Amino acid sequence: MDLQGIIDRLLPILPTALIIALVFIGGSYLSYALYRKRGGRRNVTARQVIATFLILAWFVVVMVLTTFSRGANYEGWVNFRIFSGYVNAWNQWSLQEWQLIIFNMLMFAPLGFLLPLLGKTTRRFGPVLLLSLLITLGIECIQMLSRRGIFELDDILHNTLGSMAGYFVMSAILNTAERRKLAVRSVWKALSIPLFFALLFSGAMLVYNMKELGNLSIRPAITQDMSHVKVTLNANLPTEAEPVSLYSNSRIHHLKYGEEMAGLMKRTFNLQQVGGVRMDGFNRIWMLHADDGKEYTFNYAVNDGGWWLSTEGDGSGPMEQEELAKHGEYYGSWMLSSGILPPNAVFSTQNEDTIRWDIEWSIADIARGNNDYTSGMVMIAPSGEHQIPHNLFYSLQENKFVRKIEIISPAQAYMDVAKGNFYVFNNLKNGDQLNVDEYELTYTYDSKGYYQPVYRFTGTVNESSWSTLIPAVK
Image 1 (cartoon, rainbow, N blue to C red):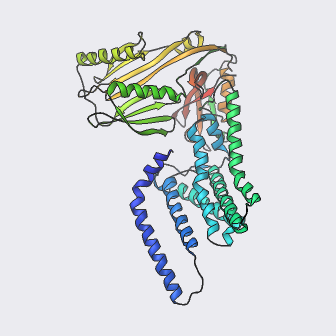
Image 2 (image 1 turned 135 degrees about the vertical axis):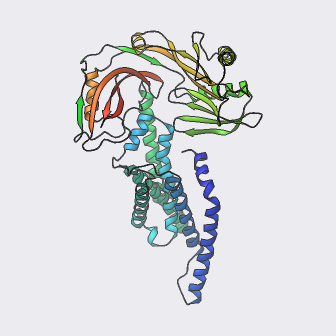
């Protein structure tokens, strides 16, 4: 979640939050005044009142971000695999996945930072650690029971570490203020957690950059427990495999390419950008406005190099073939002159409202080939009222031949399936029946833009269709 996403989630609750805050402040003041009037001797300092209010405000924000802004779309999922978030971030090699780890720590840092201001008890390490654990555990339980999130040990770990990082910072400030000189030991404690994660992320970056090939998002963060799953293989799997071709694509994980294509859309259709570039998973999003005020969205998918321009609302509806052909001539000429459409792309129409261009290659030719090639498609839904298309989807990929590469056999790849080392959206359960019926060699992009060979296994899980990808490179 980027900063704009956080703001979008918080803005709807701001009016209610402000009213609740005013009621809380007024009620707290009246209660304390009544307490003192009746002879109460315990003093509550302004610092304690402010800290209490800020902790409550922090809790509301955290609950909105982690629970109330989500739909009840989770079926009581739990993830007891510690450090699975790191494995997933490594496999995806996604900035957002790494940011999620950091965000989960930063989100709880205010709690640890503010607790020492409440009194002597919460100045100590033990009570702060216990409170942090209990609060994050409570939030995870609420998420699971309300079906608005997943109960994850990784979240508990990172939330607690973030709170303790905030606690160490506040302890260093208070100790330095009390001693009127720099509390070196406290400062080192305050720096310990940030330094550890800085070293951890730097080490991961170093290892990643030393590798030739990138990471594959098809690798699972959690291995399936296959001990109580019945697996039936209904295909003959060869035990040997010939070398196949490896390709690379400079458009993958290349934000500059996305910026260039966004710039092309703005220049061609006279669109104005509103705000900065947003991040949503693997997508980088530009918000654009036309001269007539109509809003458009430009998306660049960093993991596969594709991009699309779209707007809300219905398209222009069915058109005659002659009208579609005229749109094809216009947009085809524009893309050819812009250098984004190869001359050998084949034009066609679809569903009476879409024009498209295709370049097709078979997997067999790709695997045996030793030349650069372009494949994919462009689809455009023209607008009857605007020069700007209603939708433009661009998925033409320029793959450069690198070399022949050794791969494992289908039988070896199947061993990953038998061991549960594959990605599946819903975890397999006790008593599930997995049938593996077919396999095929195909390709997928890794995080460095290499077009790697993988095996696709297909079949059924409890009579529902199932498929998964297994890395093929030795």
